Length: 243
Image 1 (cartoon, rainbow, N blue to C red):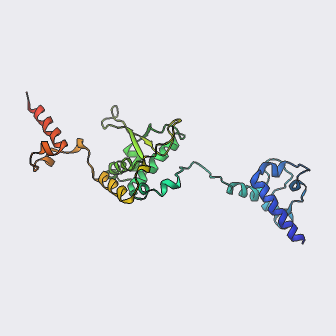
Image 2 (image 1 turned 30 degrees about the horizontal axis):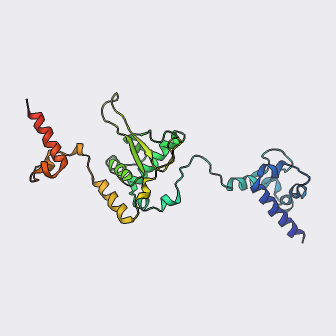
Image 3 (image 1 turned 90 degrees about the vertical axis):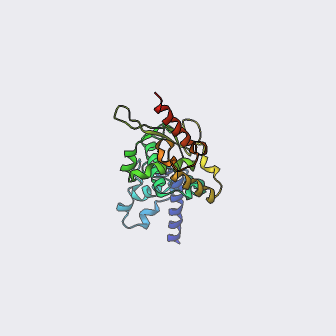
């Protein structure tokens, strides 16, 4: 019976610590059954000096055992990037390529580097993605995929050039708040895996019109009428040839 009472006291004390660690250890309120109950851990544990500091000491002197309880109770050490279960289960998230996952993680890291602020103005360079482990040729397709699936918006397009003119893309994570505005969650608009796969596949294969060359239009009958980027290419060529 003595051991049973001690075990019940131990359970009661643990519950009190989880609810209010500071008061459970330091309050000393004589009206509290927890405070007036002899400390059961000193009786139950032979090595109490190692596992539990003296309970009459003020402050966080509850020892490694109690610190373990409070740390287990919902604490994460360090910064972290939260993603909702709804997003993790969404069709859009489930079809992301490995490169898209890495790109998304690197943008989340940038948000953390900014203290969780500046969403929509997050500068991430191609070198940042490469340093994170991405192949340079996989970066652009991964970013197009993230945009198409609704996880990222490129709010400002970067530009290449020398150090004076070069500028990085700036990003917004759609599932994070921007200032006081809540996330827009465009990824929720995709309702099926088939739709998500088609969007991701098309985005990865797409090529910026600025990088398409005249050679793509050579063997197409009446290219200026059938394909918009060929029409623009021919228009630019004609204007350049005029004196």
